[in-house]
Length: 160
Image (cartoon, rainbow, N blue to C red; front, side, top):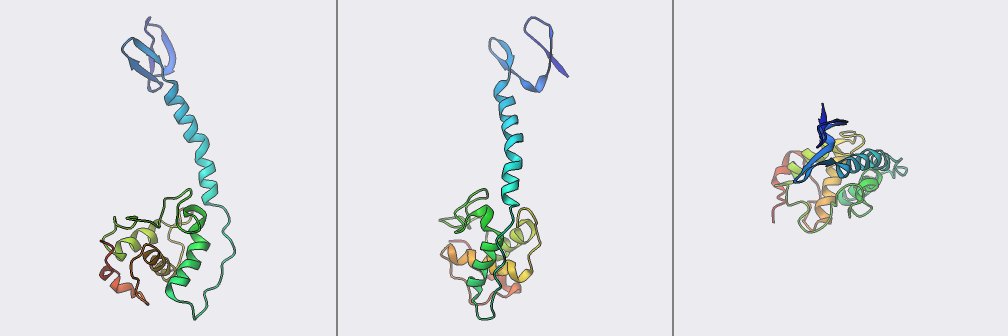
């Protein structure tokens, strides 16, 4: 559908690109610029999140849950969320109130295990997701248990 200009002629432009003003109609360049920016930046942001991760560092048998979670985080999450979870292309994961939106570790686990990593959701093992959750809980100044039992995640409160 095209719009008619103030003088009644058909402009040939889709009506979605025209914006009303008090003095009549004008070509909605801000809308066009915003759409162009989104179209141009989307591949750049997605490419950065899909960049090849550094080679995986094997988790030794003696590493603690949090240390193992740090390794998994660096290998799978840091490319979008920053090396310390400070945020980059992805949101900040470490800081005051970041985990407050999750009632407990189960809610955090449910989101992370289904939606992350962004470019390959659900591809980590259950153990790796548990390790990352332990790392995030500790980095956000919560006390993480020495071992996280998958069936007891709901018992770890993230409310302050």
